[in-house]
Amino acid sequence: MDLMTIGDVAARSGVAVSALRYYEAEGLVSCERTAGGARRFPRSVLRRLAFIRAAQNVGLSLPEIRAALATLPEGRTPTARDWARLSETWRARLDEQIAALVQLRDGLSACIGCGCLSLSRCALSNPGDTAAAHGPGARWLSPALRRVPPTSNSGRSRGASRPAGVGAPGRKEGP
Image 1: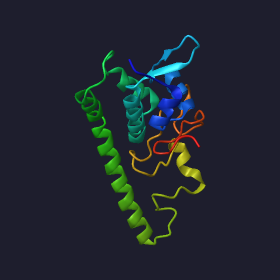
Image 2 (image 1 turned 60 degrees about the horizontal axis):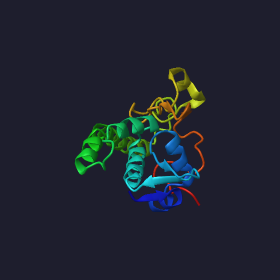
Image 3 (image 1 turned 90 degrees about the vertical axis):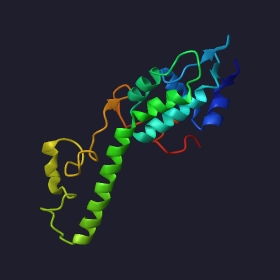
């Protein structure tokens, strides 16, 4: 089996070395160790890392990604059919996000153009944080847009402090 060093994987995938270590600790990727303890990854890890990136872009949490990866076969490279089955499970979530974004776009267009300047009637305004009694987040937005991310990653909520090299989806890692 052709194995890659952690530096090679980082260079090929665009994922920081620290993020690779974190993903290994979280059970998202696995590797072998040399007698000296150096990590050696199979080339198939590149597909898993691409999947992790795509799943993060969809909005999946690391526990959700771990569960999805657990459905892939052990001991062989996943086939196109395996990946298609997994990505199909995201379709409803993506459709919901698209609909919510269209609603937000249309609402912003109407709001900006309405000129009401009424803080008591504006769905985007929350003077005095009166919505706090209804829970966290932007309470007057549609439920799909104000979804509060689940607590994950050992008690951190998404978007909270991340280990070095583990950035937000779509953001280039490292220097």
